[in-house]
Amino acid sequence: MRNRRFFYWWSKKNIPKGITMKLKSKKILFTSLGIVSLIGVSTAIACSNAEDPNVKKVNLTLGTEWFSQKTGSTAVADFTKVLNSKIKELKEKDKDNKYKEAKILEIKIASNEEKTASLNDLKAGKSAMTILNVRQAVEEPNIKNVEYLARTETRSFKGDTKQMFYKDEGGPEYLKNTAKWVNDHLKLHPFKTWDNTREKWDGVKWEFLYGDLTIKDGDKNTTPYYRGMVAIVGNDETIEKIKKTWDDKNWQEFYNFGIVHGKPSKQGKYILQEKLFKDHFGDQATIASIPDNKHKQENGNLLGTLDGYRIFLDDMYSFAWQHYKDGDKTKNIFNPPEGERMEILTLTNSLFYDVVAFNKDLLNEQERKLLLDAFIALSLEDKDSFGKGSGYNFYRYITDFDKEIKEPYNNALK
Image (cartoon, rainbow, N blue to C red; front, side):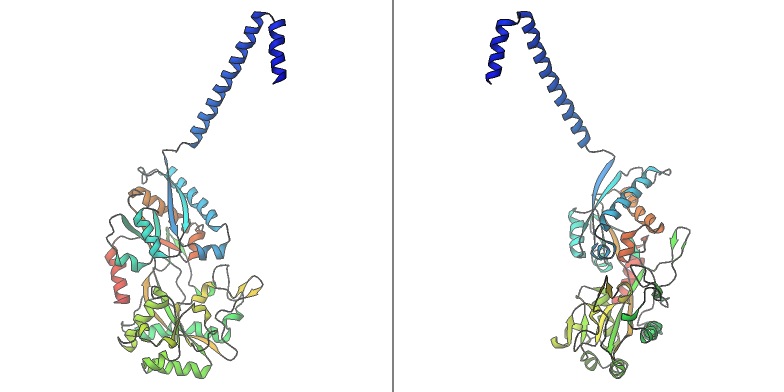
């Protein structure tokens, strides 16, 4: 401050008046230039932050926990990048104007494993797309702002070639005999001895259990349905006793061996098996009717590790996508004690897989198709890491909801 005052006093004494005015003018000019520069920078920032009118930011709600566990911590981010790139590619190469009224979608994925919460988010406009189980779609078919546009499909297991139900002619035999080759394999090679080469572990699943997957004319030989299973564990004598109670249709003796099941909302771990029990033993054979000390809600992969429980309800061949090794650690799953073994008693009715649902208020018709077509294209190109890690191997448009979704659902569960 003292130096400034000295300069002002000295300039008044020693610098001619005209020159002083020029210095003041330059000061004003520099100040003005600074203001102009700041305005320019602010304008540039505003322009860079402006929303692109051709881009629409979209939130999806998907169950990604299993996918991330299998693929890695960056799995969701990596897939999101690939999906956004495919959407942009389809939009830019749209020569037939399929997506003329669609904006380029910029996707952000939120994870939610609870499908009920996911449906609520969809209805509330918090997400534009989610994947629900078929029961939700059948029970709420006419939600005003929701469209069920596609069904998911999965790899078929070897030997399961027919969409058979228990009540079909030959149904009970089909459901028991389809798993025979797997039981034969488990006798020779218990799960904890499976080898990455022999049983063909590909990082996601034991490939030897699955049928061939071919792609032809833009289509995949995937299946739209899945089943549950009733697995049993014990030594040879115990297994034969359990099978006898089944063959004799003795419900009480059967459940006295102890039953482990999933949540009542789980189709492949509870609902399908309960329907099977009613068809086989009679309408009284509900899981809720079993005494509390004879049934337990737990993970089906604990088969062989829970004392007092010999019957396990789970998705068909649920060990197909689980490995007993986690790095150097061995997991205690599907691991009967020495002298005991696992066997699949029977499979359940088939039920259609999950349904892809969209919010019609957030995405117009062409935008919904653009997003779905991006998923389909990635699946056909073997770039759908989310689908592969979640059991979704293809996505197929629904053309008749009642015929393709509602009727098969009722056949399986009603």
